[in-house]
Image 1 (cartoon, rainbow, N blue to C red):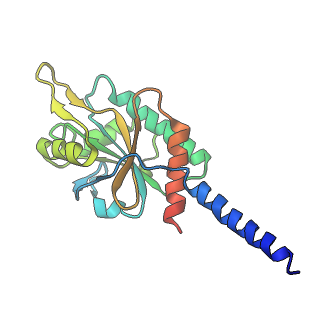
Image 2: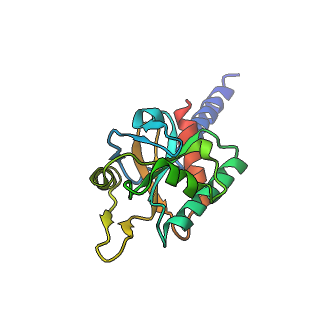
Image 3: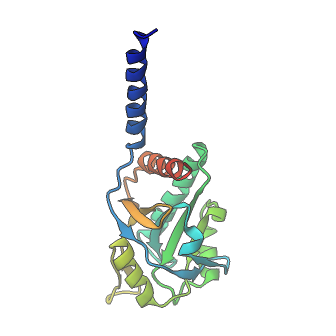
Length: 198
């Protein structure tokens, strides 16, 4: 019996090491703390950072009269929702911040998202703030640009998707307009959700 003990110890150590490897598949690439906010969604409900704490969420920046990147980005998020559903992932949120809050009322956002096959029970489109607020939020919490285009009625903003962990920290960014790495995003979200449930 004594001879089997070292082998058993080695197997236990190997098991621990392998378990550690499986948890290290996700590597945070950013460390941006999202500043506190409380805004209004498309259902005229207040949504705050506190409400999102404890959940993994994907954020982006859009506006309803966007003629270029926003419709494809929103469509891409509906596709991500489909893939999350296929994988049985339910404990998540999507948060789209309007960069044109003066125009994008809750009703306008509700009408906009109705053009897509979206699960709005898990998706908050936010407004109810001044333009300078969302510009500041984008710059300081997501390291992204939001600006008024002086040559048109369009807005300038980033096209990334931002992965935010349960503590409200942006831990990774992905292309949101083209070549969206859906499988990578789903895998990252699954790992974060699993780690948060321990």
